Amino acid sequence: MKSEQLAHYRLVLEEQLAHLTEATGAHESVIDESHTTKDFVGADRAAELETLEVDASITASEHRLAAKIHYALGRISKGIYGFCETCGEAIPTARLDAKPSVSLCLKCQEAHELEP
Image (cartoon, rainbow, N blue to C red; front, side, top):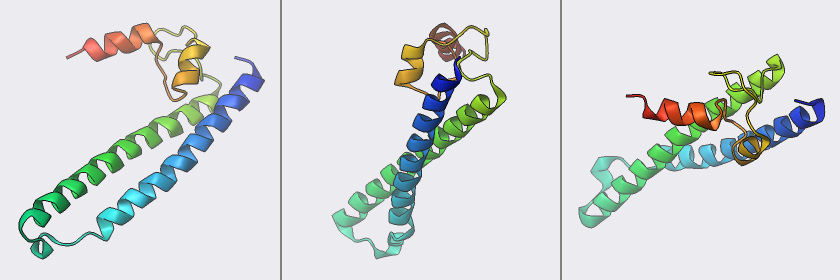
């Protein structure tokens, strides 16, 4: 992959990470500022607990995506970004444009998802 392309993907990944970090901070703030379960009453309790569960789930997903972005940035630094880590083939730029944090080509990703 050309150095201009690598620079482009590095920038895209760094921007995604910055936005993700901001969003994760907002979700974690909501969780930190939430009431204890003793503060909830009636229907409010169920609604508030559901909201907290959703925020916790979103935060966990954001942490997983941040880890994938850090991993992709590391692959750029090592000079192996854009190549499938299973088969070694080049990952098509259309796939990288759609999801720059991927490390598997579509064929290997599909095979990975079928594994038990």
